[in-house]
Image (cartoon, rainbow, N blue to C red; front, side, top):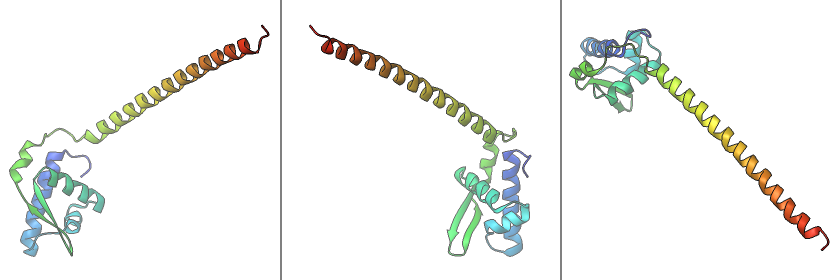
Length: 134
């Protein structure tokens, strides 16, 4: 399920919830959904949280684990059908921002060193003037 777009993932997830509801006559758990779709628990929770935030499904936490309900399956149509490259794009943005931040720190440190150098030079001049006999 790694190489499909987010739209298809949402369709699969909603279909799996419907099938599990039909089979067990109860709201499915995230673990049952992960088992059916052959997902790791982390991937399942990540997708469920993402689709919960998009108001496609409802994740209800109860004492015996989280249960899944379909909230509004029509919201799936609002998802772009392009490949889900958002993670890679986010990583690249983060790396470039870190690179920019590192460059800013280096320029700030260089500027600080230059200021210290000029400040020490001025202090040294003043001390030499005070030390020289008049």
